[in-house]
Image 1: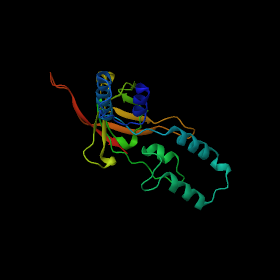
Image 2: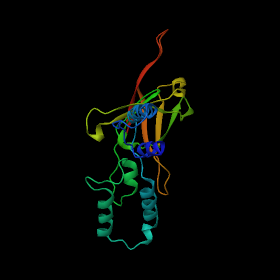
Image 3: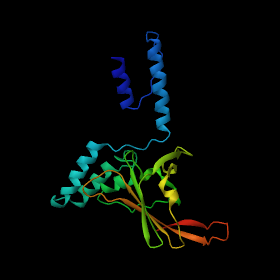
Image 4: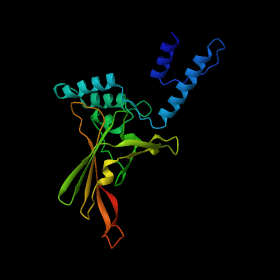
Length: 221
């Protein structure tokens, strides 16, 4: 029974405090281990997409063209799904999928060879990242991006930044005309398309003797 309760706490993201004197030494050990793992998980945790809501929204917006919705109807639905303090989705690209009147997503990101820094607001717990590099007439695809850290400098969600790294991207050969396309997918829905970010090499300096080539990246909007 205790293990079932522990699982329930984990499912709802609740930490456990060992205040009861009736629990055993082994159970206290389990509580301590659980709280430690939960704390570690939260360091790099992203917003979850509530699938039942997403599926229902997906169905609604798929058939919306056949529904006699007025402008007021659409505004009322948008207000429910994206209110000031009660948005149904924290992940901006997903939220915009299920709005009749959505604004363009403006994402400021950073790319540096095998490192990618993204706003947490454009990511979910099941986000998939694919990077395609066009360099020297060839294309290289890197899909092994893993989360390295999440910086939360303030309580403002929009300030959170996630840093990803890729082992295979370290082997990429860069040239002065190299371009980068980053695709971020947050779930698969009928009208969903990947969020695409683009970068290009700039300030390129050729290799001289034993000094390797140097360059920077800038985001293309």
